[in-house]
Length: 59
Image (cartoon, rainbow, N blue to C red; front, side):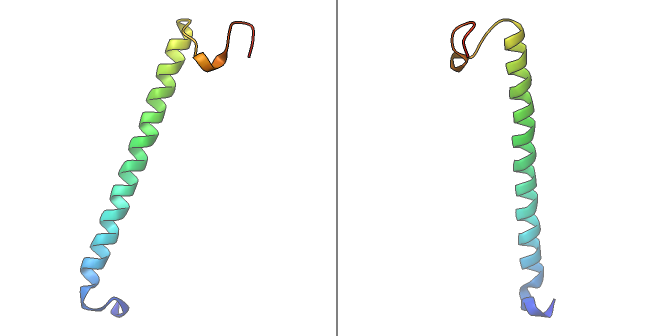
């Protein structure tokens, strides 16, 4: 730790906080992805189709 100097505690705390924020944002994005996929699946079960899917019978 001597390579970090007298501010080693601050530097390590800053890296730890950045890692926590990154992990939190990644988790939130993953959870939102799952919610959006489930919502899309429910809509498709009800017969709602995406505009990008094209007319019936054509992909």
